[in-house]
Length: 356
Ligand SMILES: Cc1cc2ncn([C@H]3O[C@H](COP(=O)(O)O)[C@@H](O)[C@H]3O)c2cc1C
Ligand SMILES: O=C(O)c1cccnc1
Image 1 (cartoon, rainbow, N blue to C red):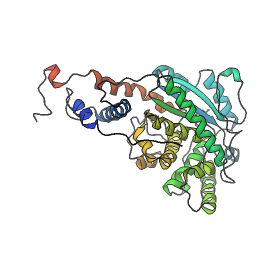
Image 2 (cartoon, helix red, strand yellow):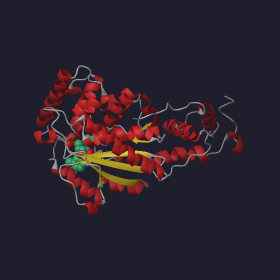
Image 3 (tube, rainbow, N blue to C red):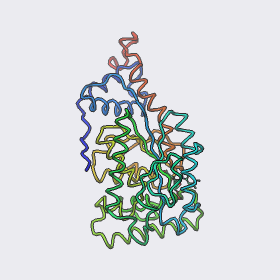
């Protein structure tokens, strides 16, 4: 369903050479240099020619919202109704993600991937519903594999539409009360961890709720390990433990990688979606830019698995795509120095790099 080519390294030497000839000590722009290399490699590969200037066009951030059956079993500070209330808040422009996407100039799209009760059509939320929330993952499979495939198809069409409109940078966010439980369960299976090592406090739960959440997530993991001898079959894994928003984010990441669009990864839940995407096609990770280190316990192990160093570390633990949104100015800075910074030769500065 997704054909993702590994990122070509044929332009890497030219790109690195251009960056190393900028008027600065070698590597002195730190992670921005790595970011510029990644973007230049992707855009050059996409164009089939070395790109000497990088231009971000129509950056799009898509928030997928869905409800989770496990939320009715006391794993969050908030009831499932808050998912729909927050979707209305997104539609009315009042959430953190609205503020940051406005500030950083992202185009924002809100998708109902399967919240309990849909919002009024007039709010402009895209209807990509796979159902009215998933089943409780500690008791039964979240959804069917047919629903996973349908979610992938819907996500792929949406990414294709954004691409056709000129989008060359994409990010995803999520909203779904209970979705850190689903993300933790996925992570625990993929990394073979106990729930205690994968579960965090999500929205900020008390000690008692935390213990209960660990118990239910362990139950979910044990349940599928009994019924599924090879738990790493990714589509099945998503059906067993995923969420409708996690499925669509996973599919959207694969679709974006197929189109060679760099993907900005938000926090814990989006990283869980990215992990499943990597199990489906390992080359997806060539296109991932990890925006930030989430405050959620478990995110560090996910980042390690990807061998990724995120751009920001702000103790964010909100989701919605907020960390991804905040990284756009840094992405612009990486493009900016790559495009506009003088070389030793053009600025007539002693070449401290070659001459050292
Ligand atoms: C008001 C509010 C706004 C949010 N925005 C994002 N989340 C975040 O918290 C949820 C996951 O945490 P848990 O698994 O503990 O429920 C997700 O909806 C995530 O996007 C929110 C949560 C709340 C309560
Ligand atoms: O990092 C995240 O994505 C996150 C963490 C806690 C709650 N919601 C989202």
